[in-house]
Length: 331
Ligand SMILES: Nc1nc2c(ncn2[C@@H]2O[C@H](COP(=O)(O)OP(=O)(O)OP(=O)(O)O)[C@@H](O)[C@H]2O)c(=O)[nH]1
Ligand SMILES: [Mg+2]
Image 1: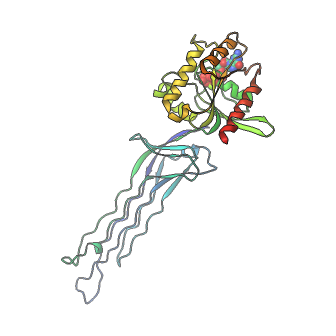
Image 2: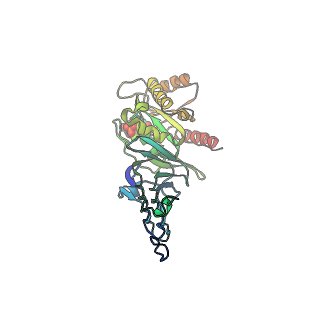
Image 3: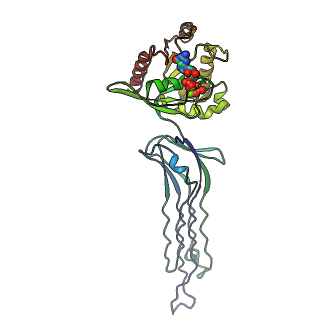
């Protein structure tokens, strides 16, 4: 199961209480104050670690609680601080506070971490309240509560090549044709709801990871059709292949469709629009396909590659181009 969004509740540890105590010494009738401070509660830390590749381990544990600090005690003994609790996630995980819709951190690289909930501070023992006017304070403070948060982890797919396009453009079919991935394929829109990854072997020593991403529609950048969710996967790809279907079943114009998707990409995130894009017209054996290719080339000033996942036409060319652009990007 590919899990890319998980919600959990975290509770940092409470601080230990300060202690109220007096030293029992014969020659000081009431003794001196000697209550120690409490230890700090453990914090909750989220850390990205290499080798962890999905959030599925978190699906079964929804509540995480760090330990409390130890209470202070007599003879000025400081209570021990509790250990922090670490939750490990894959690199590429975005951590948000769900209640306040707040971005805590984008843990893009292995080793990146964030304190998601701070442990409570330990309380003060009564020895801290001693003053010139009060030599035997009975005052002390309790440990603070640890922070509590509702977190959402979202994993962005990391792939070399991302397939971009309207629903039904033929993205999943392409991925299944050039890799061993077996995404669902059907002649209706929004067949793909989760990204699928496949390894494409161009030849003996050239390969890359391709991501089939759910289809985008107009308004995606403002959330339509789960647009935010889908666009966030595209963000983590280095090169885009923009698939344009030559004769959409819904009667829409292919060039308009191309423009609409570009517009969504541009509205979503500034650097996404600057990502290299290979323009490809799918379903090459359909009668309108060559004309659509020419119109797209005219529209964009770039070559549009006409290919078919059914007949295999120009698949080699598309993959070779993808690899070449990728190699340039990697430099
Ligand atoms: N004639 C022809 N049909 C194709 C080709 N590639 C895909 N199709 C058909 O187009 C339809 C949609 O294909 P998918 O691969 O599911 O399209 P998608 O872009 O993944 O669609 P969503 O997941 O809904 O976004 C299916 O009926 C495919 O069989 C092609 O090269 N030629
Ligand atoms: Mg699909």
